[in-house]
Image 1 (cartoon, rainbow, N blue to C red):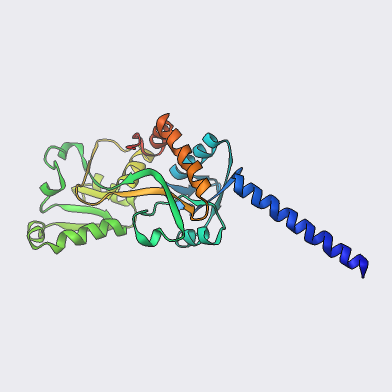
Image 2 (cartoon, helix red, strand yellow):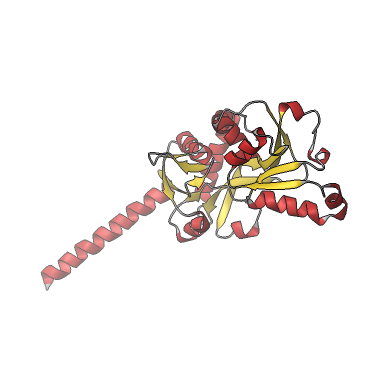
Length: 267
């Protein structure tokens, strides 16, 4: 009986010690556990050999390097990333969700912005002078993907009777992917391609597309991406903010942005 109690005491002591060490690591943040979904190109994705990569991944690695800490990524389905913060599965989340939406503010705090996204349109260079802005494209064919933000914009345009009348002869061609939509643009199946800024510049950079002019679509609302941190990790939030401030002050963030989008950061 005494031997059994001694054994239990040893086990309990080991558990307490292990728990204490775990808390110490988390409290000092020598390793930051970051949740990503791995399927949100260009922010996080996996290569053909299973390596995690992307703008958000490189950004978080640069932040960790600036803070002289380690970072470990955990791939989690997009729809449960926020819940992983609440459960404490991860310390932070890097994903392209709108930090201004109330449903994304539950159980988390946000860092300073690391990316600003908005809708843009692309036309071939030889049509850039003709189509100076989106309002000049009455009656043309639009290439789009079935992304919620793009379709939401198009639906909002058609709610206005004046605008609906102006674009009544326009045709919207919905493609399964950005690559297909770009192909439609080059084949002149449409006059323009509408997409998010991040996706547009990522695919232009990835496929080295040329002879294209990209312009902002005004009044579509700017989406601000920030790193989400658990609501009980104020110290970590401050540290990550310092890391982001460092990347911006040294303009290292520009190099990461150019790698994925071929353009510098607008922060």
